[in-house]
Image (cartoon, one colour):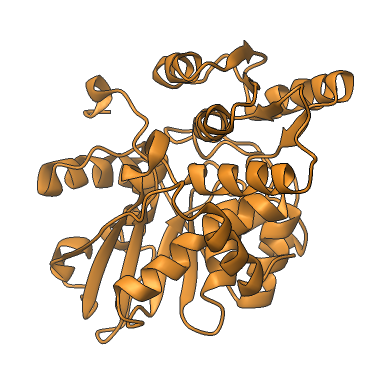
Amino acid sequence: MIDVADVRAAAARIQGRVRRTPVMEVEPAEFVPERATAPAKVWLKLELTQHTGSFKARGAFNRILRAEEEGLLPEAGVIAASGGNAGLAIAYAASQVGAKAEVYVPETAPQVKVAKLRALGATVVQVGVKYADAHEAAVKRTAETGALFCHPYDQPEMCAGQGVIGLELLEQTAGEVDTVLLAVGGGGLMAGVAAALEGKATVVGVEPSAAPTLNAALRAGRPVDVEVSGVAADSLGATRAGEIAHAVATRTGVQSVLVPDEAISEARRRIWEDYRLVVEHGTAAAAAALRAGAYRPEADERVAVLLCGANTALGDLAV
């Protein structure tokens, strides 16, 4: 479990290591279906401009820097399992502190992400066809080497680091934001932001209908395994929500909505056409919740949409 104190500690620890990403106010009517009520304000938090192209750098730095502070960063370096973005962030953070990084990814990971991992100096091992396969192999390798295991979404330091986005957003909107829509895979981003904004704003977790990990956990009252597929499976492909994510979502009243693949692809195209921003399918899920009407804001509501990652190939924008 984490709270806002953990997020504030993370903010102090990673200051100067990560970018304070911009916020852009956009026309509210562009983000709602025809004849639906438009919110009072809509902001886009451009976390896609973060180091390595996603929010994950924040949690990676917090995890590795805290281990270094406590003398727990071994010579064997760090090991991670990832669909791509977490691995990139961990490899980058490790390179910045002079540590080795070994990253396990499924064979289905986009080649653009695999190439970036290698460019960052990480040893890349491709295992299986889904994140769970890579995770199992990474855990086994960690036990063999004694390296520091960096879970992509279910460690307190990871979640707290991601939550720094919430603190930034409060400052950048002068505390006016009522609701934050963000994509959920394993739930580390959601957990951190919900902890940071507890008592100040509502968090809505958006998932593809084909990958409902948080939604299933909230309905079951605990994290459960689900089948995942669809256009966003490379970044929102966790088959089970994290324990921390479920606990924080339950405590803070996070809302859960689902969007179909078609809405995600359409939102992604519109973000490019309207703002010339290239985002991953997983990232576009958050915008799709407004565009497709899965989340319907009130007329006086002030909404932020977190655009959390951009590690995608330019050639598949039409997909």
